[in-house]
Amino acid sequence: MILTEERVIPKLMNPKNGMLKEHIFRYEFAAKFAKGRVLDIACGSGYGTNILLDPSYGDQVEQLIGVDIDEETIAYAKEHYSHRRAEYFTIDALSQDLDKKLGVFDTIVSFETIEHIKEDELFIKNLAQLLKPNGKLIISTPFGRGRGIPCSNPFHIHQYKEEEFLEMLSDFKTVDMYHQIDESIEFPIKDKKYYLMVAVCYNRQDDYT
Image (tube, rainbow, N blue to C red; front, side, top):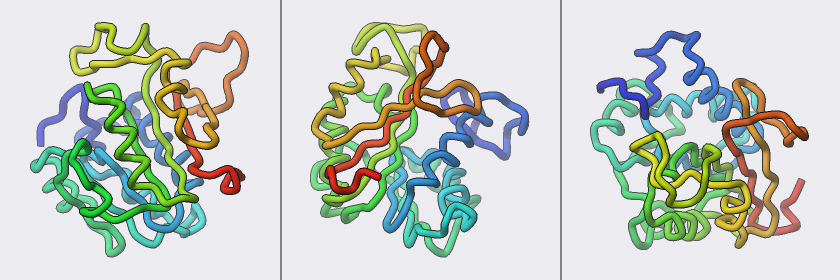
């Protein structure tokens, strides 16, 4: 598999690479929330599997399903990041009846995906259908000038303002919005500059912890 600006392939990257380190940190952040049956949607090369299944984060993940639209990417994940509790599938995140194909999940992880998808509302609707009533979604996307506004990254259709991203997630009962800079994910501090949003979305109020 070829390394590109939009792919994170740790085995082909310098471990000190800033983009790699920040991506790994997002999975480490998500691992603290992950439990039960977990979906990594647009899982890419699959490197997040070992982090989400790392027992040092509580060993609460029973099964991990990684999906991506690209067959070559999934083949790479199967070869390099196989795990007895993990399975990988080539699936379009906009497909109908995803819940019938994959089942439903306690936790869904979606990192740097929504900005690539023109039908972003359909994508969020599919994620909600895949989530159990008391499940949680951890989803990230970079800050931008606005939904649908062209940006410097030719691969991004959307780069949201925070209020737009929150509106996209408004069907969830509770949304905790974190901001990321480098290897720091935190509730935003006034006047501190960040470049990425990480939302933890709870499907029901009684799951808010």
